[in-house]
Image 1: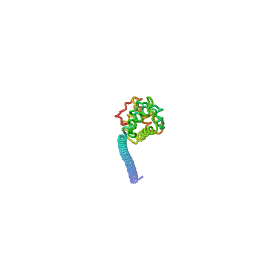
Image 2 (image 1 turned 135 degrees about the horizontal axis):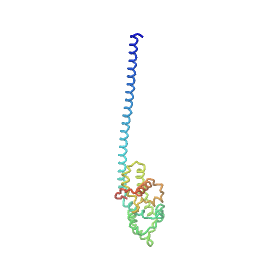
Image 3 (image 1 turned 90 degrees about the horizontal axis):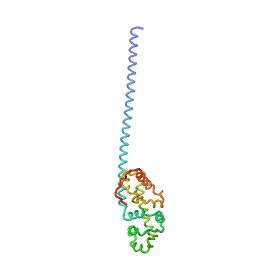
Length: 231
């Protein structure tokens, strides 16, 4: 091999290494750009997801507040008296209300009955005197139907709120704080459980789940945050 041929061979080897280095550099650069694009896309996804979750949480809080306001506007002296009365009745008495049959009820509940019925039946006080038998009232017909109407209307409104809670549509923390007073067995507060049983517990899945949740938390030693009842 002549000196010229050897020099040409060296130049050829040098050019090959330079080409390989440039090719490798391009590949590395392309890889880095791809990684950067993926990281940027992930950042955009997380930012969009955070924005979406933030909007969802605001919507849930807003809906919960609207429901609380609607509930406050819905309640009345009649509903308050009905719930307090029914919470104290036996299963048989709740069965009479659920089926609109004769309701035999102690005279000790006379004031409750007057508070419930006087807005619709102005003469209820005199009527109670005529249907009094010893220590009980024998209430039937339109009076029992009206009591049932108020109680079922109350449960239906409550169910619509607690169904939104159970499905995660409304903010859970707000609903739980505002409606935790519904369960207090020491004060006979069970959202008219005896009546719900007679009407059909399956008809109130939201209320059932809410009551079970509150009961399990109390049994677990959790201290529920309770507000002044609006019933």
